[in-house]
Image 1 (cartoon, rainbow, N blue to C red):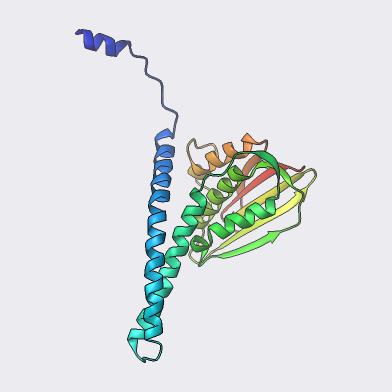
Image 2 (spheres, one colour):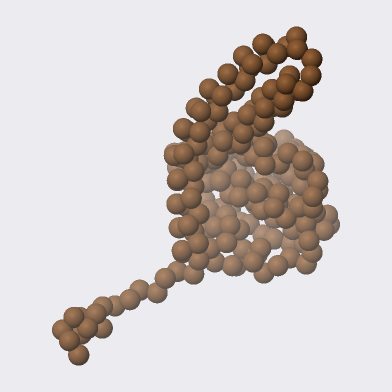
Length: 229
């Protein structure tokens, strides 16, 4: 055996955490998307301004040209909203565990995902609840991930239900969808590296808990329970 091979054989290889490559892939894609999005939204803003001018020039013109310009402006508006939501979700936020208004965080997550949730019926039951112990940024990311999961699983033009309620010293957030049943193993929190596994890890980092069950709506029901303060 050559010296180089002996040295290589002596190197201790650390086992890779399950799902680590997948998590890194998502993280890298998010960082790249955030960087590209800023340039893209600037370009879309310029194009939207030019399309506004074109629509004004065609305001008194009957025919397909005016309709095409209006459709183009609407498409640019939708694209800009999509890019803005990417920037909002990707923006770094300070990490601090404190009393958090859970309803406000849920509404922020729903606002960031408006373009993605368009076409689905989102039922909101956001009862008044006490503040809960959480890291707002981490909770927001967990909710965004759970809502994206629900949107991906829901039927075409389907339904998602989001509820917040206070219960015996805790605040509970419940997200349900009308997706397929039974629940696949990949959509459970014990699958390392999955979005749900990451969300549960984040929630547990500030003393909360995340559980999964079948929803009466037909899909998955995810519940986050946080300590009230």
